[in-house]
Image (cartoon, rainbow, N blue to C red):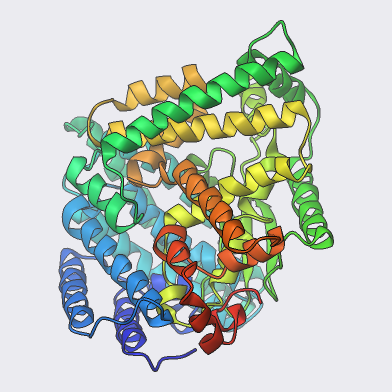
Length: 558
């Protein structure tokens, strides 16, 4: 990787400091030297992070402005946006004072990530896990003492996550220990210490019932607007985004009503989809294997049809969602490999409903997997997995670590529509289901804006998803769990799709006769359609390609 540019030298120095502060982030990036450590995230550590972010941004600002037809400009844009968003999160949003879910996710993710992404047959991996387990009590104790104003919805979610975390360690660590007899006693003792600290954390969560909790997770209009401008790179006001959502809801609802008449003229679209969900749920399913068959069937077909190129060396596992993640993953989700991971293996989680659920609840939740073939396109091929494995091959750390959510989620919703366009999922029922997916993404936009500007309550948002979209109470609650924790992300799906479609039309106008493969390969060479893609269509961009040796020189498909 090129470390010669001034921007990337600053980025390398910053990330090394950040990974020393937070070794769990270093592991997630793919660096094994951080695997045996876990941070103690006190208020002092956070103050150090804030100071470092400010100093690094000043260092970046002191550089001369690069020409806007260079890859250095791309690196600077990506790194500056990262610094601004991190600073916004720590200084203005301050979930570290209010959110008891995130510490549990980080602590358990630090163990789960090693179990999934490292070679667990190696003693050094088992030893790293043992050390992290021993560090978990200090980690949880520090986070518990800094959470001063816990938010009600996150306390409820944290209780489910905490109990799932205990179950996970009780299942996973003894299995690991059996493979390492010399470490068996040490692993058992470390697991006991971690489980004891989780139990104490869960007891603390229960004790919060005796004190008033905040019911307001909103970040406010100013902060959300800054996310739209800084992270998303979009020129819209929040009012304009809300109006876009309204127009999309109206358009999609109208198209669904028209299409529903071609499927069954006697029933509205919601009843048609609900009947098919119930029929799906009434049949016996081996859900994990069905997801696998759909996922890898799509992969083979995309390659055979030349729709796009796949990243070299990519692999994917489709697994049942661990219990501690289920409160945040109502149906399915994807976890990408780190940009520096030697093995580019993605993990596709599927939340198959546990047989222990009451029959009615089991069928209702199984029914949420109706149309999962489209979900496979979104999460795996040609969606997140393909997109992020290509992004990991960027030639600068600044772009490897970039996190442009509009591009990430916009690409995946575009992929859902692409499956209909290509005829892979082309029956009227599939088209109706695709429109339904767009509908709840449109409602996501409106809820994101109105919830975080305090125009609707959590209960009103849940009721909207149940009434207007047809979600179950459980599914709607899980959606709001993460909507509230990630301001600006829910709106990114449909807004990003709009950006991606606009880029496709613009690219075609500049390159008459181009194939889908050419457009897709070009787009996947970048991290963000608005801040990068539109710039890249300028004539001067041909000079970048020449200097970088084509798209492969930028880390994307050639």
